[in-house]
Image: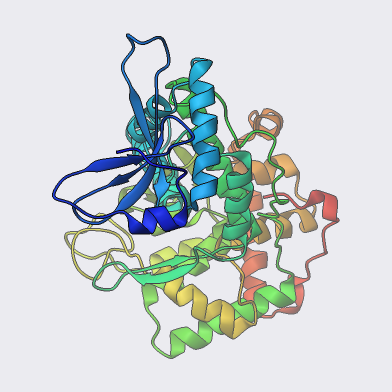
Length: 421
């Protein structure tokens, strides 16, 4: 069917019949309106990318009502004109439809791109992918994501667009926080996934490269003796009110040892050597290691009763796993102490801060904490265990004294340039 110039009036007047048909424009060859038996109408363009013997290609420009006739005409003119230069818009759209979504690429990355990552790191990556990346970028095609999308993603995470507090199990919760630190670290993961996509030839460039991230202030919170005393007071009060004893003990051990949360919460009795004052971990973020612990930490561990049938020092209340509720109690502790945003990991930094303020060598403190930084380990790797053990004992006693608000718990503030976890 042929007619004059396609306008809104002619489109509205097109009748629905029992089959598909196209009403062609009388001025621009190849531009028309397809009408389906269902009543839906869409602007289309048809063209050849070669001579008469090449097949006709059809591309849908847009649905009637979502794009005006004049704009559809201009788009059709471009498509037909580009076809004369060999550009096939229909083929491009078909390739785009066949592209993996970024959510699919993330799944592929978790399955095949993380062979060298530790289980704990992989769990963190999976959480960031499911809670931040997929909700904001997961439905986009891998080839569609631009640097602008990445910058918008970073702003959205920083502003808390993906923040949530969800129930995950019978007694579990997933607290997803936003903020600039979270945004920066998640964009770092995004860059790794994009590099994986480039290596797999799923796209030709990494749109994360060159994106300026927020300054990550992770690891810059150190508690003074007075602040540690507030944490100790809050712990004692919650303990007196009947708070979970495993959570209380874990928090105290984190403060007294400078260990990571996963190292204490997942501690097994086979790894505890109270007699010699060590935690001999079979695995950690930096691999197998021995953590020297002081008398206060030994006292906490000695007060914990082993549960028959469990290998964990702090087993779950049901099942065979480890205790998972420390974050819930920590939120109460930090709120009661007046530090609503303080992280458990900040206790590790505070342990190091106390040691540095006492005058202990950075290398010795690095040995206690098991830092993986090459520049640091090269300076303390040759040290014998005795000075390391002595420093661990003294530092943990200083933290314990601060918890109890004892006068001998004075801690000197650090220069800003030394604030590193």
